[in-house]
Length: 324
Ligand code: PBG
Image 1: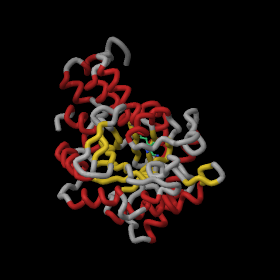
Image 2: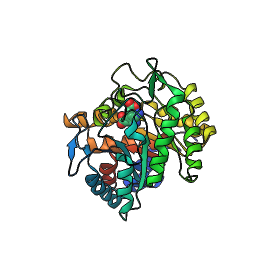
Image 3: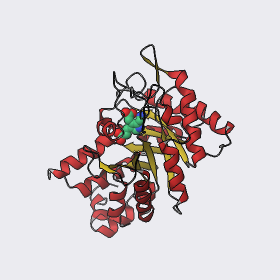
Image 4: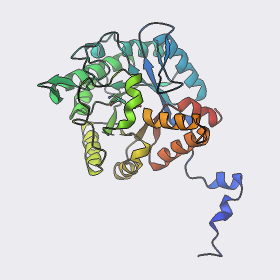
């Protein structure tokens, strides 16, 4: 039936009608808030390029997590800024490192917030790359044991989910085997499966103090032009034992997200990254866009495209908009 029998505007007339037929609805339980942990106590250092986000000491993280719990947010993902860095990222595999200590502190509280940990060497290496360097290159296989050791340290401290973001080949299998061998067969792996070499990570590298000291990450993260390659990356991670796959960044890669969800039917996440956050905040500060509406629209789009849940620096803010 076509016009005049069919009038698409009939169901758009009132807020009630629109709510009735809305296909995608956001819920705070679908949001994960990224948090940056630094040494010390009582520390709250605002990140210049990410207003409203802070590097926090463990005691402050615990308060922040309580806030997330109250707002009904699904969980947090932790990034560590260690006391010391070296070539092999030793502070990252240390069972007494900053992330294991933070996880334990969070698990001592009564909160049932999900605690996810980012597993990657770049925050812990003095050169800032996501793996160890051999012959001036990021060496794949020698990095795997370190990543697996880090994941086990996080799981042992009580992490609910471990999330490798390094983009080394074979890391999901290495981590799965190490977790199983260490007695953590039930700890899920959220794999940053299709992670692009993106300029949208700029503000994060200030936040996590993890910018590479030489070169860039294009020899291990994906080329922005590639779609088929993302499908292969995701298929491999599933084969290796990933429980959840992630596409990152989110808004510039919604096509990849949609294809991933349709093709694999896996629990699927998306990361609305630092640059996506900062662009919205900066434009809103200039009065060029309506912050509230753009935040909700961007998150709705990411969910609509196929993300079951979203890692987002807007988690708390969006939860409040949604009435939490
Ligand atoms: C670590 C990592 C990065 C991000 C998440 N994990 C940075 C990078 O790969 O350079 C980016 C997150 C963001 O921009 O919000 N490998």
